[in-house]
Length: 342
Ligand code: SF4
Image (cartoon, rainbow, N blue to C red; front, side, top):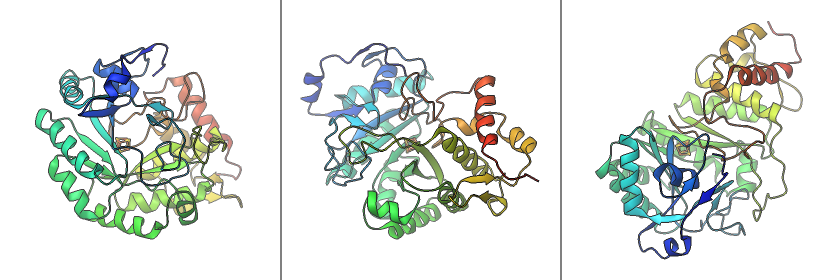
């Protein structure tokens, strides 16, 4: 989504709507709610439910103490639109093949779960579009409510790959969150996702351990590159190095595909991946489609320019890579391998 030109109409009027929903600006473009010139449109419609979040994640624009704009999440702007019109347009866009999924990003406020349930039911009443929701679930019964309303998948965000980072940057309760993820994965097999952010201070080895634990339970991983947002507690932290992100993307993809034996991987003393336990020829063949470097998450979730600036470093490709891009990405992964591969 290159925002060469954006015309969101009269946002002040939209903000006064009684039945408003926030829509990511790229999604608003696909739905015809805003004029947005974009080269890589979203294939999932991203909608935000709830006001400023009651939680206080250090990296999030919607966090309780964040001073970021109220309509921001990561790099993206989310203007409000009339919910009924948005849902009707979404149903049409799905039928026309312009969207393949809808995703609700639900902030933690007292009434946001009920509102999410209502919006899911409204979308389901008008469309068969697969629906995901990323929600701060308290227990499995919350998930059961959203599935009953018509959601296909639910994401419970881990965000941080270690208990220390989770508790420092989010909230106490890492173990509780892991237990809930495991319980949800068992009760709703194949329907649970999570989010992990690369670049919060974890090592590549921490992420690989996390990928293996989640994959064993059939939990799908949405991978994000940390993006500093002005007004948040981590506004001054740098995004991850691209080489590190590529190594981690390769590991996530191959673990999810069951093509990597984590026990055969080797790490430096700083926790950097130095061997995947594969020869460079095997590795190049396994990564040759370029899929490892595309946006990871629920099926058809491409989150264009969520972590990237147009023309800047492309952490997650929102579309198939060109052969040159694949070559470049694989070379970056290979260049990091400092131990002889079998
Ligand atoms: S992976 Fe994508 S579609 Fe799934 S919950 Fe996360 S943002 Fe939504």
